[in-house]
Length: 113
Image 1 (cartoon, helix red, strand yellow):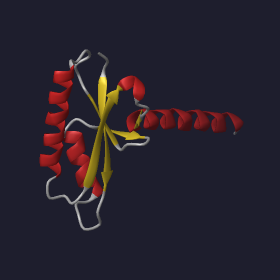
Image 2 (cartoon, rainbow, N blue to C red):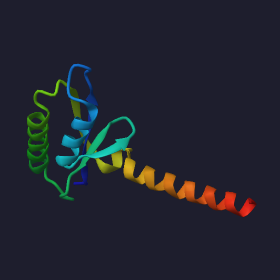
Image 3 (cartoon, rainbow, N blue to C red):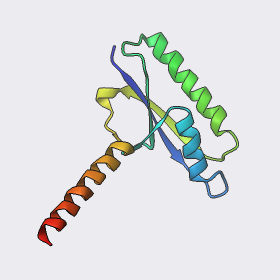
Image 4 (cartoon, helix red, strand yellow):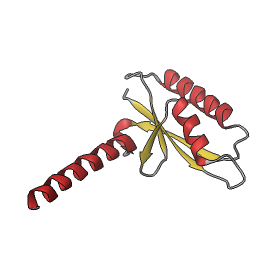
């Protein structure tokens, strides 16, 4: 079998916990903030998971997420696919690319002056 990721979308509620608190909890659980159709991704560590291992892992993640977000008044969805089927861009990678672009632009501006 392939490597798997569990993707999560979170819907915030103005009467619930602030986004920063929810994001902190998600990070504590090992989720990675991403850009794309989903808000967070959990990358399963085991490369070749059996169907049984995958089912158990998804259930553990779902239970942990439910427990961590209980009382926060947010809605969330979980979706698990192989890494190959999922297209997402970790925000850390996007931030690194932006920093590199900013440095290039600054160097170009310095050359012009």
